Image (cartoon, rainbow, N blue to C red; front, side, top):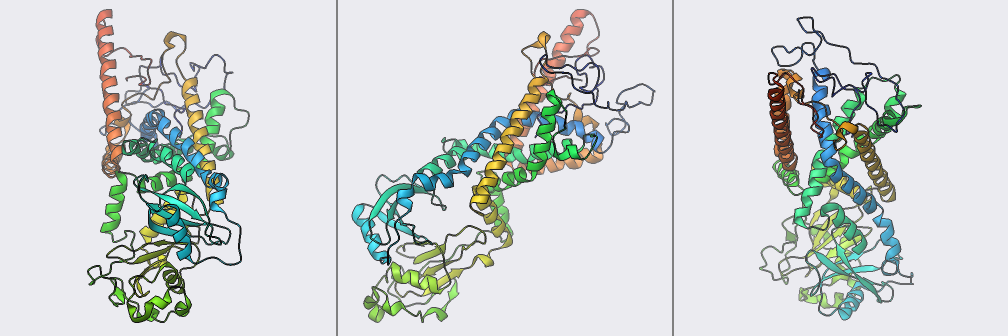
Length: 557
């Protein structure tokens, strides 16, 4: 995402202030060596034979069509978006870089709680849950996460006094001895522990709660705009060889070298940045609601297994074998259940809860292998057992189990998810570093580091183009205003419609863009007012001189 670009077309009556970096009037920072000049843009001839951008009926310069007309607009938008949104992107990139490696750090920091010596035989889950209840008698068990590897502890999640809303108290139990190895706060479907939770909340809302989510949604809303705008600008540059498209220019110095590094790295990172933007928006506050609404209208929302005990009024004694998911009578002959602990209480179907051990047997026989999470039943619902292996290929099937009979009431296979629901799941898990495990996390860390470097190099280019002694408080100039007038109506009108539609779908993008336009318009009006006053004081007709300003607003043509 280039904040700035060295190749700009000369604007009329502003040569003294907006000399192109390619011409002899180029200003360079005193400490930087001179850079080789680039080929200058060819001058355009107006119908009267004068040099400058002559406007035709469409409001665009004569002969300026396609990219030549659109480029100044993209450059100006890219400049301001990069300059003003980059601090948010930098914050998201730094916190995202830290979060990407929090999974591995979690394994080291909480090794005692997460790992246990492998014994000869695992105890029944009933005994492990009793150990957790004994350690925390005031807590209520809400779910149990059963690991898929022998050396991992069983994680019993509890709610109760002192547990923050939306989080759980995780009690780590040795599956071979029922020893409680520790307790930690757990958050989210990925069961994040305190270190990862803290970094996740820093990345999502800067520990400011719901108001802080505006920052991350703004960053995600603009990231794809800045990334694709930078891609267009980089592809549209003239270069001696195709090598310079993907690799830094050899022998370049100063600002030209910075631009070369910035653009080449951006080319490698642009696809990942756009995907990060898209996946981040899927669970944002405002844009995320629009994404969910569209998915629901298309019938592609994420399905949920039904665990409702229908027609029982909450009485789990009924022997009904079906839930809302339809009959699964084929599961009544679950081999091995008669030998499980607690089965002696099942005679006559008088027991209200067969117990978690038999529920797990039923789920395993239904095909749920690997690590699973068991959600405890409520008054009017049964157990829900779901696979938790989010690494590709994912194992995310789920079933609901009647607590009275052990019958499978409903089942949901990930293979049956609608396509958009699958893509959303893959995208979110990839964004969080879960989909491919360690390689995914390394790739996220590298992408975050690339974005940090791109932003730093962008600001360096902006700094190198700052005005010199006569306006030492000023900042690097943007391309002059009025770039939209150079775009043909046949391009401008569809572009405006697409922008309005995008702004509606991504509300924070639309609102912030309107704020940018309002501020830019106000700055332009102020510049014209100052120019008129200066002209009146000098006795010259207003509007015939040039307006020079030292801020980022640049020059008013």
